[in-house]
Image (cartoon, rainbow, N blue to C red; front, side):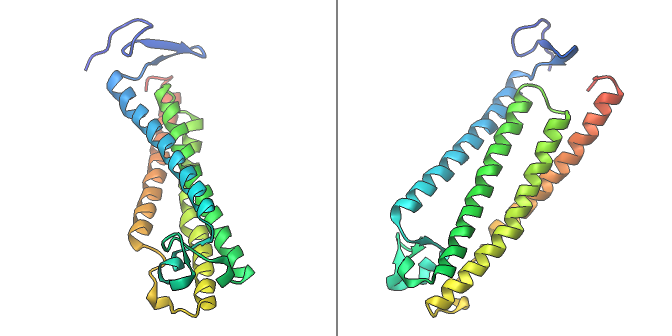
Length: 205
């Protein structure tokens, strides 16, 4: 695919900071723009979910699926009256951590895509954002999962339910998130290498 010359359009070039940078081709701009849109939509979905959870009442927990009379919002939460303050605190902490991690991932993906849309693929900022995305995904896997497990155990104890009655962590999502984290880490390494090559070859990449 060949690109036109000039300073306008999607096939031209732009000069920023003394270096000439090729503008992203139109098809690539559409792809990257779709990623930006996806990040914004994901953040909006997280916000809508939080509003719905707070409006429904109760304490958000997967235990609500088997909580019986103590279930709230069709099993999405548990009545606070059925839980001890410590249990409710753990569950709210787990929910807050989960929401924060998901919102951070959505924002990071959108910001990385915006930088790529502007042609800033192989610079230090994009590499740092990729590493940050990987670390947030790792924190979600380890920290959030740990807090969720502790809160779930406490809720099961308060409601006198057995752990075997509940699949607290969906292993499929766990595996997918782990693979996502490893893929982003690999991309960070690749982008860092490309950034070094770009500097060494005076911006030929």
